Structure formats: C-alpha cells, structure tokens
Image (spheres, each protein chain N blue to C red):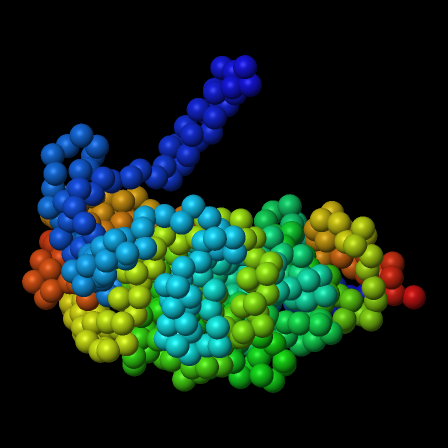
Length: 81
Length: 415
Ligand SMILES: Cc1ncc(COP(=O)(O)O)c(C=O)c1O
C-alpha cells in the first residue's frame, strides 16, 4: 500500500513536474489544480494499467478519481484482485 | 434579435478582461513591402515611422525579392488571379503539380500535397492517417496548430517533456501495443529558437517502430548546409516520414503550406484531409512565386549562408553588450528579460529608437520567461544589425540590465 503510494507519487512527479521547486504530496490536487491536464490523464491511466496489470474502464477514470495520489490508490486497489 | 445588448455586454466584458490581463493584441499598420526597412503607422493615426524590422519570419529576405515578385507577375499574367475551386474539382493547374514535385525534391521526401496554410496541413494530417487504434506522442512545446490537429484526431494522445529523449523512450515503451505510433515535434521551436534532436528521435523511432512527424516551418529554406531543413542539419535527410512546412515564412512569405513525406501518407491526405478537400486551392500567383523561391534556393546557398553569418554577428554583438540570450544557432534569437512589463517597456523604447521587435510573455511563453524575440534575416545588412545593436545597448543601459545575471534582473524588476 505505502509502496504503491510512493510509486505513483514518483511517477506523477517525474511525468508532470517541470520545475523541481514545485512540491506535491499524496493530497495535492492534480487535475483540478491544472498540474495534470485532462489530455495527459491518458498516460497516467496507461501507466497504472501497465504497472499493476489491471484494466480501468474509461467511465471509472474520471477527473475526480484521478485528482490526488491518494484517490488514485483507492481506484487502483479496486481493480487489483 | 439574437445579438442583444446583453450579449454585446458579455463580449465587451470578455474583451475588457483581455485588456486587463495585459494580453490585448494590437495590429501595427505597415505601409511598405515586407523588408528589413519598413514604414509603420503606430499608434494608429500617427505619421509614418521608418524602422528596422527585427521580428519578421522573412528569414531569407525573399518576401519582396525582385525575382520572386517578377515570377509572381508572370504567374498572374499566364494563369490568372484565382481558381474559384478546391483542388480536386477544378482547382489544380500544372503549376500546382509542378510545385508539389519541386517541394518533394527540395525536402528529400517521396511526395507532397499543398494546403492553404501550414495551420491547415497540421489541422488535417493526423485525422487523415490515424485512427483510435493509434497513438500520437508529441513534444510538449509543439506549435498551436499541431495541438489543434491532434485534437481533431481520434487517436490516443500523449506527450513527452520538451526534447527529453529519456522521457520519449518511456512513452514509446508505454504505448508499444498500439497499432501505429507517431512521434511529433517541431524542427525548430519558434519561441526559443532551439532545434529538435531529430537524429536521436529517428533512432528511437527506428528502435520502437514509430513514425516521425516534423513541422519544419521555422527551418525550411535555411537550416542545414543547403537549407533543406532540420533533417538535413541533423543528418537524417530522407528519414522523416511526415514533414509539414509553410510557404509563409522563409519560402517567400506569402502563404500556403504542405504535407510532404511517404507517398501513401500523402495520398491519404489527398483522399481524406478536410482542409485540402474543403478549402480553396492556392492562388496561381503564389504558386508561381514559390516556384521561383525554390529555384533560387536550389541554385545557390548564398542566402542561407548570409543568414547564418548575420545570425552569428547578431548573437555575438548582443552577448558582448551583456544581454542574456537563449542558447541556439538559429536566426530566432530571444533576448531574455524574465519580467513581462520589462519586455513591453523595452520593446516600446526600442521602437522609439527605430527598432521593431516584439516582447513575448505569459501565456505565449512560460511565466517568468518574458523576452524580446528577435529574428534575423538575410535581408539585413551589417549596418541594420549595427544600428539595432546600438539601440539595444542604449536601452539596456537605461534599464541597467547589461552584464546582469538572471537573478539580478529578477531582483530589480520582479518576475
Ligand atoms: C511551427 C509552425 N507551424 C505552423 C505554422 C502555421 O503556418 P501558416 O502560417 O502557414 O498557417 C506556424 C506559423 O505561425 C509555425 O510557427
């Protein structure tokens, strides 16, 4: 669980943060704050599916579900066995 | 009445918002032909002012070149003014076909299709060749017209960090299961004047079985030893699957664009690209002018060589004066000022000195990256550049920014 949280946070930082000074945490809003635009949600979804061997239906991949690292973890866990 | 007072007020409010945000765009009326020396009416209603143009995309100085103008006149006389038709009904003349062949040869591709503009080429190409089964992976700083084209296409879209090859490779791996992958980049990026790492991109695309798309609008005609573009510069001539470019910048500057590349992809555009199918053909007079431009450029590299020399002179002069420039070796030379207001103030003062150069700031460039973007031309003579350098130096002194670091400028003027 903790490990997954960190993996996802690391991915988000690596993928979306251009300026090292920007700090983000498990609770930082990603989509509603504009850090991740809805365009880029695609790659986040693909990353999660590949990494955790799951398939997230499009209707579940809502901006709300993807808005923080914590909420993403909840979503992923729903689909892992 | 649909356009009620309420609706009018709503738009007025929005326009006021644009004003208040300091991003209201205003045209300056030029009363002469496009060249290094122009006559400008600005502000509107004021008397004409002679200024040196440092912000045109007229990289090769061909926009008003006598031979090009003459060829255009001849085209006008022999092929008329307009065609009043899209290409595939009755809008294709022999010279449209000839131009497509000449562009193919010049860019080292298999085939070419003309579009009314490069904006249209970019808007139409992706939808014509890709479907939901495919993925487009674009550099995060590609031109707005490419973003529009991507939006119009049903294929999946993902991005990679600007010129970051490690990140691009990760994305190619992530999307390995897609039917087709296209990596999308500008050849020369118009705001920073940096060049895509096309050699590395081609290598990665070979390894992961992806196609390469390059918009070479700010490169065609002058980047590379013989001016063929970024692919020539990077040693991957003949290896780019799709090139789009414009005739509205170095290549005469009138208008028009094209998709040039693998012949099946070009054929798909001819069959399916909407701006090709549903917009009027390029005017004969413009086609005749571009044919002459390609003729001039194929015979001699004199103009691009002069542009390269001018660019070196200009970069060296500004650097020695103490300005901070974006690194690069293209004729797009951004003078970094960081603060938005400072970029506007300096642009205004330069204009008073007879130098026309525009300040760019957020949202056109990232926050804290405000700049004056200068663009060098083969139409500039050394005396133009010297006069502009004198003016830049004078104004730089006025604001006390010469020899200062980024940090010092930010401390003085804020971000
Ligand atoms: C990179 C790039 N692509 C496309 C365009 C659009 O070209 P055109 O003026 O032919 O529509 C431009 C010009 O603004 C550009 O800079």
